[in-house]
Length: 233
Length: 400
Image (cartoon, rainbow over all chains, first blue to last red):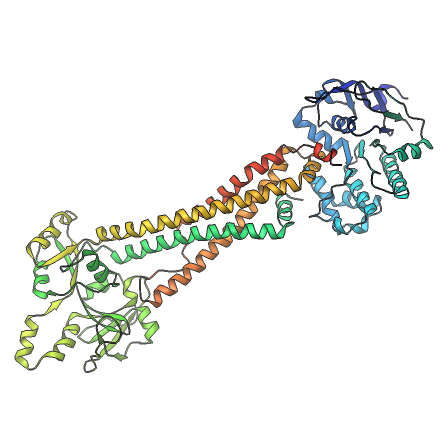
């Protein structure tokens, strides 16, 4: 573990309380730049909440969370969108490629969302880096599951984020595909020197990673336990 | 990637719903444009033909009938009045101009109007070819008459008795066309103009037995009515009363009668406007439902845009823009459809030799159509846009 200054994600006594449910208390974390964080645990254990907190979409009830040098408690609603656009790459479980748009335009959509000018070169580069450069004119419905995930990942890393948040990236995949998807994520994060956060309850991920990474750091949480594993490369 | 092209593509990602909404909105806008256009055109047509005629004097009867027959030539006249009585009015100090009108004959459904050259001058009509009449039995025809009968300067024709087709043909005394007027959009377009003497001549020769008889007929000469312009607007107060009280004739003020007529038509257009309002409301509701379900369907997509860093107003703008596209397209389609209907109506009215209305005019009132479309689009998209504005990224994280 590096010193705190070199850490990309730092959380201290982080809690979040929904209106009429018990407070979620999260384990303290330090994740280095280029590190991998696994958010484990069953549904309802707070994985989504933690992702939303880290993306600046929710404000913590108490505690501190710093992502990429930004204290998220200091970030107001207006600036959080712009901050998220340049810092966070998000790979949703259901991919959510827009069916009305081509693969290329789905990436252009990400640039539009952040208010950037459409940049042909970086779109082509992002697609090519994930091996789907020749599919740019296809519609999402014409892609295989694996191809679609690559496109969604290309969209997530288009703006070269420092943090990649992946939500259940292996949920509906068979063993071979799951391992390929994981390798792709790890490879992409490594290429960009980005910190990878995997929210998953898939035990295969743990197994797959244990070969390369240090054992997970189990962290106990109050009232709603969340298994938070952390490892540094 | 621009907001416009993106919203365009989202709109057409559901082609059936988009086309149906477009159709509904366009129909609503088309009917409202049509009502606007037709009422405006009828107003204009009346106004044009009225052209500064202050009062119409003719035989007693319905004042509106007198105006409709004498000014717009769309009804039968109330009867005839003695020429001498009209000539007496010319000496009235309040009267500036008297234009005599003699009706009775027609040619293939077009009225032959015996009048003075003042009538042509009054409407500022220009000759397309030939000259104005100089002696009896010479005629000048309106552009629509020329077009439909193929008569031209130099041709001759015989008028038939009565204002409809199928009357007795005055074959012994044919008219000679000496000039054709340019199209002016006024009532002159569908008239055959000649001198009052011609009309007298046709009927007297038919009936006169000998020279003595002819002399008596000349003394009893009649006109149908007279169009009168005042010297001073003050005459409007006293002159009609003077005519109605002291002569066997009646005086009717066209402005008054037309206002009365338009207010009667106006009830009809108000009902039409209410109906088109309901149609527009329905269209607005349909657009609302479409946008609302689009937001529901695309919640996750919209949430993803938020996750990608799009501020809420951008998401709301996307929805709004989609609705504005619909409004724009519906507006163009609606106005074009209305103009097409107007052209059809103009053609039909012209075929019936009724009021001349022009097709493809763009009155200023038509500006209310895009404004309405904009209003409907905005109203229909307020709630969906708000829903999109506050779409939560949790939709995305918890959609498992």
